[in-house]
Amino acid sequence: MKTIAKKIYLDPNQHNNCAESVLQAASLYFGFTIPPEEAVAIKGFGGGMGCGSTCGALTGAVAACGHLYQMAAPKNALNHFTGALVNAFKAKAGSILCDDIKPRLIDPDVRCFKTVEIGCDVLLEQAKAMGLTGATVQIAPEDIKRVKGLGFLHNKGTNCFSCRVITGNGRITTEKMACINAAAKKHGDGHVCLTTRLTVEIPGIPFDHIEAIRADLAKAGLETGGTGSKVRPVVSCKGTTCQYGLYDTFGLSERIHETFYKGWHDVTLPHKFKIAVGGCPNNCVKPDLNDLGVIGQRVSSVKPTVCKGCKQCAVEKGCPIGAAQVVDGLLTIDSSKCNNCGRCVALCPFDAIEGDTYGYKVVIGGRWGKKVAQGRALNHFFTSESEIMTVIEKAILLFREQGKSGERFSDTIARIGFDQIEKELLSDAILSRKDAILKGMTVTGGASC
Image 1 (cartoon, one colour):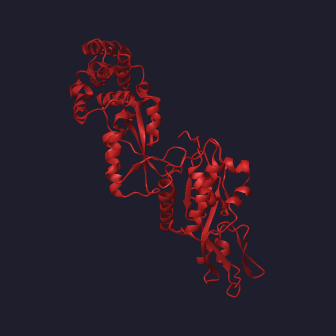
Image 2: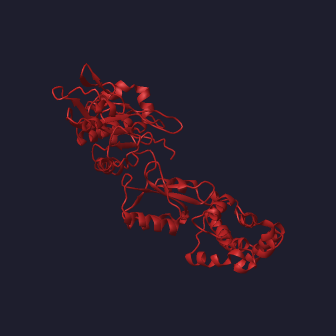
Image 3: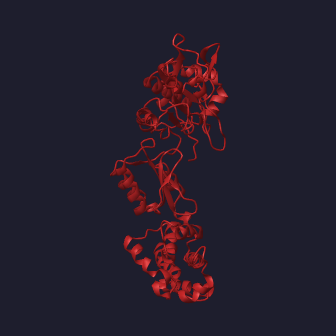
């Protein structure tokens, strides 16, 4: 609880005083809700009510004690606990008056945090006396598991949760962002976190606010989720708004998201399945570290009748991976090195580079985390979005059919062999088994987050 209070009290963007910090930390730790009018009222108790009188950390603890009393419903009267709390605070701080305490306990680096700590300590003592021994005992494990399926992840050591809000593959309207902002202020701890998967998380949401925040987010068309042994929300780079982007990544990723994240939401897999859509071989969204990644391609070739074999070749100089080289007066491109970024096409002043062929590379079996695996490219040049959608469908079906509970797609590939997996994905045999795989199999998922 003191760790939570420290974060609240010392946050330079929040400007919370000692009274607010103790009360808010208690609400997050024990999982009770602070009504808006109380949040406004407690602010006036900071700094000894602005005149050096009763310490704000103490008044914040007394206010929180009332909430805990309602939660615990003990036999003794509330005054029994508040009286004991005040006496304990006085014993630890040497006084209950701000003017007496400050000269002894104030620290220029952390202001009055020592009194905030004392407020937390004496409140926890009274909570224990009421029979409240910790936040997590208040919520049944089955409820924690249930709301996790809705996209609410338990905040360790508290009765609060982080709400995972699904974005449009990393792109969101300003109206939806305003809705998230309002929801974070109303239901969370006032912060918004951005995940590596381009979703948004709102931490510090009390358990009894979960349905309310889902309803508020739904007003702007926002959904929560993105957990479990399923296809996860798709991530995308910014595509053609980037100078290197070779195709509309948002368009393709939204199609994948609608088809497989939403459309296959009830399909349980052996583990989570992550998809990333990258606009070029720069790999900014790390397609090769996902279960399946798509990488934009532009195949270039030299027009030998146009190439002048310049001694200072702009293409040779500008190729970022050294695949272009002038040999015997003619520019050549080493296909074993070339990654099809297409950047060479615009470099030649004589237009000796042709680059009209666009397509996609697909890599499978990547992952990161405790174990890391780099994805391997399928030996096929994909030329259309429909081909991409089909190979993704095959990969998910194959994982559901042949994966073992708890193993990632990379483990399945390693166990069966890349060549066999590739053979399956480049043929249509598995599509004939689609109904049996989706409807005739029972799969136990092994994802823990």
